[in-house]
Image (cartoon, rainbow, N blue to C red; front, side, top):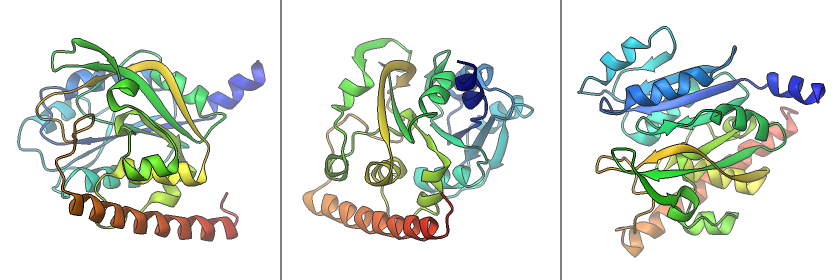
Length: 253
């Protein structure tokens, strides 16, 4: 038991949050994260040029987080790429601005990633006022794992993902033209790493009219648009696979 505790204590976490005009929700989210950080952990935030009071809210927490960008970078994918590029720890946790983390979430992540590489965590699907819908994240997205399923129609949700730095080293820099960063990272994980799904609910996954993604909704994209998206994501994964092989040859992992 002591050996397990020592292993877990060595796993430091980088919580990577991308923000944009999130002043209605972000304070509650940060307040749910900070008590869970342990010595050596970090909360990093990249803001995509918010025009509301998001930066004022972030300034309230300037001693507790690291704001790595405040300029327009061009959307969700670029914003996450920016914040991820500044992370330093062994475990990477993706974080949206409008959810709420439940106590013990980071302890669970630390425990699970001691024996796997990539973790998809469950949560409660709630509305704007945090009222429970009665559906969990896994049921909401109709989760199916596996590389082929993920390539055809990803069911992974970015804010529910945590993974080891080895995956990030393969994923960065993000290729141009990928539609969603979480789709790209999940495909790399499914292809090359150990993946696990945790059914315990550790997040309030807030759905509202201003969500950046359409997670759980029927896609309005045409057949051609879907085909183009998959063409670019296929090329992106091929590029990541080449990077993986090069790092493997160099003995980086």
